[in-house]
Image 1: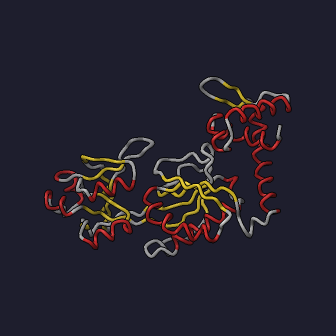
Image 2: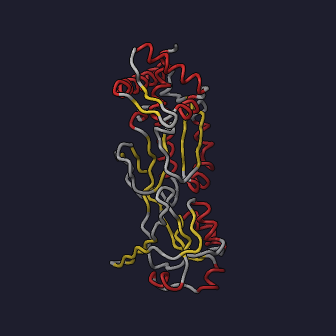
Image 3: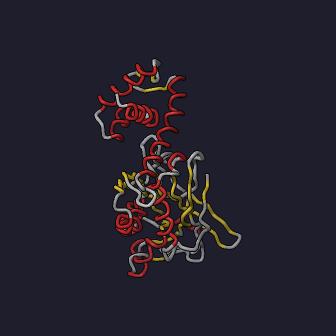
Length: 311
């Protein structure tokens, strides 16, 4: 038995919740993971996991072992990094997950600069708008817009994301131009955007001076992915609120029309989020700093916040 491998296998099973996902994250056969944990239990002479056909649970001894093992592995990885000069040249496999429009418009077009600066980092870029279980899926960090829900994670706010209310010319020709948000409830349709977790549609918000409306509006089409949402607006399914820098080229070309222009939309905070045990990792720190600089230098995002840490 390789003691370090066995410890890693056990920690990954606990964090991911099953042997299959643990094996995938370690790039090992499932049978190898099973044998490593069996050998570990024989070595420590204690049952660490309860296994059934449907789930894996941690025993009291396993929970105590996990707490110590996770800390030891983190310290071990930091030691390895420092001894290989990883502070000056971070290396290893970096697992990131980014929202679809953020990936398309910002991260991927600029990612070459990160790869050139850190040639020893191998980037696994997940692109999705769904909530990600960072520990369970063994993801190093995510970039997401919106309010934080998991207070156990560490988050660095890197931007305030501006939105604008738009519609296609074909939609305006068919339904007219609204003069007030209240008209949207009576005469218009929006393109909905629903949560992948709750399946509920997010409201549309409008503010002008002291007036504020938060409306859940009628729709014919609702989607749960940012690029599909934008494509639906372009296709004329309704009015909606889109990220300003995504919409601007289409406003300039006439493919979209700015509506309710005297009503503002509340911007969303954007964060790069990572588990507490990754905060000392040189490769994660390198990406977080690069992402923060990328957003700070964007002409529509930079200077819109005081960058800091939030627990």
